[in-house]
Image (cartoon, rainbow, N blue to C red):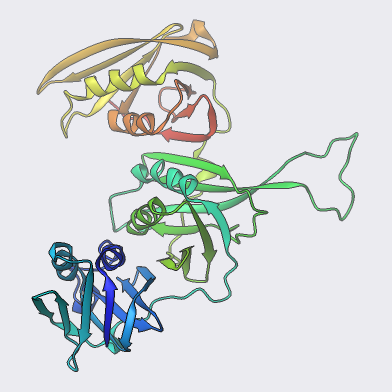
Length: 394
């Protein structure tokens, strides 16, 4: 293999592999990226067997070939090299020679035939989506993914395509027999760690050909790589195979292996069908108040008490090891029996802070039933984003 390539182009391609390669695994080749030639371009690939990347980049190829080299060492080196163009040459023992000006380097590699196969898009039907939309959905749900890697089904985000009828049949206008219902398709993402659940859904502008009715599970690391991939693109195409989710943007591809041997909890049973009380609260004021109160928390004492009143909310905290605090936040009761208040509920402060920080509207809606039942936090201007939070005993 012998070629010349723009240094910034090569940096961009190899840099894309750094979050994918496995530096701490038992297979040394998974710390490498695969470099191979393809006509007048190079193909850069990486995989840890769960997440895979492949990108095509322009180059001046003098001699075809392929080899693998350690991604982080290679990236750190070429980042510091001078010049705009690098000359690369592979040796018979799969080492890689790097030349620019008077600088000469050689990195030890491994044969390309030892590199695991990277998935490809074959007959998957692709649906184009806005990158910003999918990125927002992941960022607004990933914080409630479980950190316990032994619970694979909870350390993942559940993706689902949901069909919602635009118009329900009525007695005056019944649906004709055999006629298809007029349906809007939505992409829904859900995450839970067993103590809280976050759900967001966004409208799919295309006709919903993405075959995800049964839902798919994407691991946390895969989600982090999807966010990085989306940050570089304005639009991406999604495709679903039997074992992987595929993302395509121009000549760059990302594949995330699905968790097919685990089942996500029935989240619909977790979300209450109705609530006895509904309160409107200023999001920023509530966020800042709980954040200040939580400064006194420790690993042993991390719960705050919310005392709901008809016209205000008392936020209190008592940590025998540090001290105590109390603040008052104004609110508006929109639904419920004001005479039955006050109601005191204990919550983990972090479970409120993370969704409040992810939300954007000025006001949030807090919905509750009883002190020992989960509450629901919803953006006032976005009913398609909500967080269910379980109470805790204090």
